[in-house]
Every structure is written in structure tokens, then in C-alpha cells.
Image 1 (cartoon, rainbow, N blue to C red):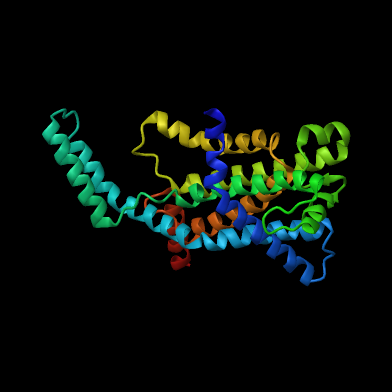
Image 2: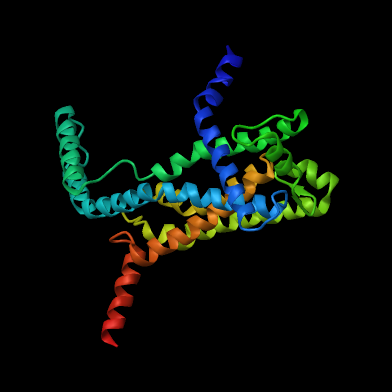
Length: 287
């Protein structure tokens, strides 16, 4: 039974894995078309970068929906605050049912959606799929078979390409033991990915969160999230292939830029970022 359960996830996500392999093969073709040697590390790094661009571009409508949802929740917040105050301490089942009905009506009035976390959730299958693709590259190289749309030649090319001895299929422990330079290179990429995650959360995400209505415990957790995310990236980098760490670096760079634009041009109403934007606008009008 455990073996059967372990086969369920790969089977369910097999279409996503094949799609990631197909897109990676296509982006590698693009890298070759612009003049990079197909077997070079530069071609495969560009292929991973273009994979990130393709994935995040597809997710842009979901991201826009998430921004609109956060704005809707902010507009609904005063009414929800009054609702909670009105029913504070009430334990009557009928009254609680009425409160939930009113809460639902307020959400509907402002268009509050529960899908604001969709961009992050939708990327989880993609991370797993890329992990499977990069992991299968090692097996594919050893037996000379294809990995989805990546034929045997592309598998051999991706597995052989390296920077300072660092391959897409390298793992930190074994690499650091056999090639300290390559190990340091992978550590640098992981640190870069973690730093981008930390700075995104601290500079652009936290300033768009109004913690005034949150319990102190939840507010504390909210403030710790940037550090927890960065530590999570570093911890995961110990176990996953280098190709996935590179993907995280490019993906986190995209997130950094994207959240910076949202923070600058569409901050959540009522948040410190929105207050900063309004103050800047008033200073500009006054001058």
C-alpha cells in the first residue's frame, strides 16, 4: 500500500511534468537559435530563465486577480471589523450563523475572492515537475533515454553542461565534497535565491499588509515570514538538484520585480505602502 500511495503523486502530476519538459526543450531551442552553443551551460541557463518567463507570464492573470482580491478585502475590512465587534463574545448558534451570512454578503458586495494565494499554490506542481525533470536527467543520461520532450541528445547535453564543474543535476553535499568550487557556486546561487525571497517579503509584501486587526501572535508570525521563507529556500537547496535552485533564483528575481511594481503602483488600500504612496503624491502636488 505505501508503494502504491507513493506512485499517486507522480501519476497525477505526470501531465505537468511532461509540459515542463516540453517547454524546457522549446526554450533550449530558442537559446540555440540566438547563437548559443546547444551544449553550453549558457544555453541551458537561458532555457531555465525562459522557462521562468513562460510560467510567470501564464500566471500573470492569476496574479492580477490576487491583487484585486487583496484590494477587495481591504475595502471590506471596516465592515468586517464592525461585524466582529457587533457579535463579539456571542456563542449562540443562530447568531453565529447570521454573522457568517452577513460576512458572506460583505465578501460578495466587495468581490472578495479566496483565490489570492493561487499564484503560489499553482507553482507548487511546477516546482515538483521541474524537480522530476532534472532528477530524471541523471537517470536518462545513464541509460540513454529521453525525458518527455527532451530526447536522448538533449538529456546528455543538459547533464553534461556545467559552470565551474557545477551541473544541473548536481546536489550540494556530493558536489561540495568532490568539487569545493562548484559547491561554493551552488551555495552562492542558493543564497541569492534566499536573499531575493527575504527582500521581496520585507520590502514589498510586509508593507502591504495591515496587521492592525491581526492578533499579536499572527502579527508576529507575519513579521517572521520573510525569514522563514529564506531559511526554507536554503534548507531545500541542500536536497534538490542545482537546476531547481537556479530556477528558484530566476523565479524569485521575477517575484522581486513584480512585487516591487505592485508595491509602487497598486499597494493594498489602508496598508503602510498605500500611505507612503499617498504621502508621496501629496508632496508632489504641493511642490
